[in-house]
Length: 380
Image (tube, rainbow, N blue to C red; front, side):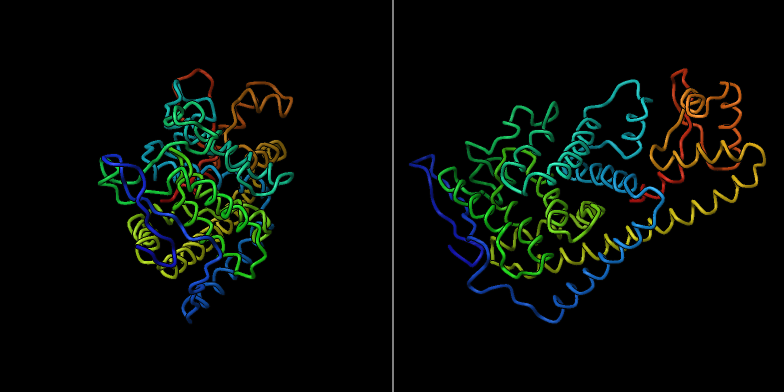
């Protein structure tokens, strides 16, 4: 069976025979992507919202931390799609040293954050490539579920999606004999100057990666990260603040249906429209979050200005919260070079003003948190 997305072939011998899918090389040829009025409109809207997101992010007091917080939220949601139960709050608590024990679920999210940061730093010296993809995968899978499934290496055995065996699977990716040629074409396509809309190309990169399914585990997480890496590598966004995991998590069945219909029917257009809709919704929400943070800062600065003699020290503490949302009395003492008692009173005063909150913990070290800033990101 064959359609423009690829073909099914039989492989193996006798009782070991099975059918797998070999994706067609990109860019599509027979036919190429069909642009109707709806898709043209979605491309235009997606580009408009991405431009707006770039503008509003640049106005933030600490855009780098906004980017980092967004990466952590993405890490949480992307990991939850794969069955992780840990929450954004669990991650924040672990990072603040407030967890008695870091659950393995949180470690998966922490790995995702590390992989995200590593990937964007690596893109400054290394093109988006199969090598970088393997490196990212190695970081994602280190010391967590799937660590025994060759982290950082493309698979050397067959995998499948759904079903209790390869013969009942809903999808069987390319066999090992075809994997390298599929990956070679995939890498060439990422760098090909084919005059495709970059957003359409990002959609195709994701769907092609998921059809190839080159790792024994972690393909979904790597595939979602590839979207952000591609947009950054091609200067579609100047700062990596656009991640689709929340949209995918909220529309999970539609996401799976779209990807299924590519290899089953060759229907790329429905997937691309779904992807572009996700870009629009995600960018719009990110703009709203950035604006809410700007409004929150203005409101809090008014409170700090009215604090009288302590306002100068309070402002130093406050500005630092945009780079790290938790602070202990010890940290405040060192930062301000004042007594422990004075810094404790200052942090308690910031709590009274509704700026800081006490971080619930069982340890002796008292920690305060800029909860309203975190809450801006913590909406599902």
